[in-house]
Image 1 (cartoon, one colour):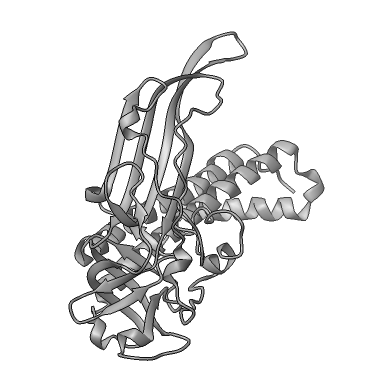
Image 2: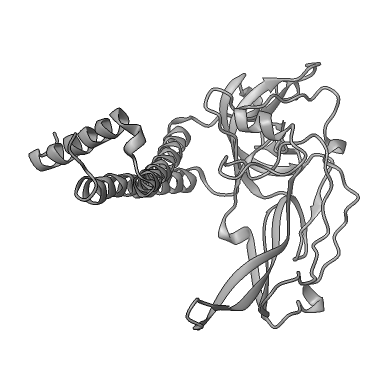
Length: 342
């Protein structure tokens, strides 16, 4: 239940809003700008809450979905655990030795700029700028000892990689040492691991849209890799980019899913176009269109579930705080100073 004070504030705010709607020609530019700011703050809070709710739900789905064996997996939503095996295409790890089935890398520069305000005061600002980045996933076979099944991770999977398979190195100065300036094989193409009988369907609207776009994934959708049927690795660019400031540091970072790594997959089993052979040979794993989720991770089920649940609650609390702040802005800044009698 709302307290009497809160109820009075919200009632007053609603009354003022109705007055302004009744006489829109009398809304000043400052009033309109204030309402736009409050509306944007509330929208940000709502979107953060929505993200939190989705993450919390994902954590519960992972926890409440019983894992299956490859040999007996049924069509529909599923959860599998096993080893990530080569299905015909593997990549060089961008900055370290070894092969992988998924990578994400970034090359950055730490730039110092000097800004001058209206009074002539000079202030230094330092920021990290990304100069080169790329990510790519290959289809792979999940082997749990009872059989192998193809996971079309290229179809918009959300990769959750642990710190154990994350590499970051920072260097002072403008250049990256030669020992880290690795040349990767760019000849592999993920289409080589996809037979004619493999056809995946978009598991949510974002994947459907992204699969048609010429550029990368849409920010905020949770799809770490652009869904695609073909694609090759991209050589990291180690050069600096043009900047107004002074480059103080360089950084390289990568996350990978190594070949033969322990892997967890949440998605859905779907039948191939030309199903033949054993149960697992007739099926593929793609995103689950009922829940809109497709998760591939080197973390354990319990760790992954608790991470999603914890961050879901954090986002939810932050979103509620932002939304409450927008109501406070409206009550304190608008009702108290702008409200006019009819």
